[in-house]
Image (cartoon, rainbow, N blue to C red):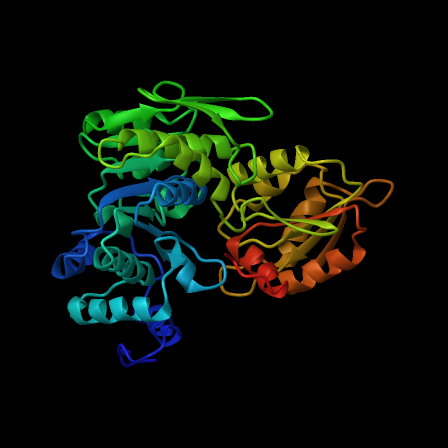
Length: 434
């Protein structure tokens, strides 16, 4: 579509238009989007604002914050990315997906206000989320950073509290090739005098230095907040608050207590503005949902879906697989994009995987299934029994079908490597993302 759509057009028309509009999918910088936001007064209203950045754990932390504040009776807004199946997954108001009509209404306003200013797809959608939160007068808006922090469109918001969940090497072409460089980019979501939560157990010095330079109120995991746990329950300890006898979060995986601790530290730091009783914390943790994060599909064989696509996330996934019950054979469906560290991701699994099903994703960023297979064979030559076996497929759906046909009922299938891989299999299974 070359001409701009109107409020009468469908969301699909609008998204096609946005994808065609900007010469590059990613153009970091805040001047353009800030100017349009000011014209729309998009950052005014919407209640208390929490920005969540980090290499991994952002989505889980956002999901738990939303669920806990909902349980406490607050009107919530949640903005995350990317989506798995439907664009509407990116924007939620009061726990419900934004409708096509709600989103289109905001996009039409943005299109009028921008004039001759060019915006990226992500900038349009960030503004749409902010406008919706303002319109529905949310009490608390939770916004997930798309890429980095310093130059990400979400950073136009003057956050009341900011969270950096973890810092690892990813998106090196945009953020730098060391944890120090990447940490510096991510720390720019911190604000002077405002709570700045860092749940990385070993944060880069650049994060600490930047927080102190701008005089943010830095909360460090292991210093200002922490958790303890046994097999039945866990407890959170903050600066002034303890929350004992908590049930484990509904989100599975060993790293989720770290993410939950970050959420509870943020909630404690904002308690004077948004009080949250203990029962709401318990209820919110149990009810939090986030598809594609160590998501287990009921039935046999056991199917695990995880969007792990960088070495840190792959290491967490491998650890979580180890924590599961015994399975005779593990089948892995993997598809990746070409700007991720495929060799390091594969290395994290060692010989835990008996059968690899390597899928091409399609699109210009896709890494071919053949390339993934070659790297696996190099790292893990087949043993006397011919394991691991490695096969190549044109799509994640075809790879999954093959894995499912070969797996016994007491085996497990793991699908990982990209949001695109998990989304393709969810669609193939006919399951909604939420």
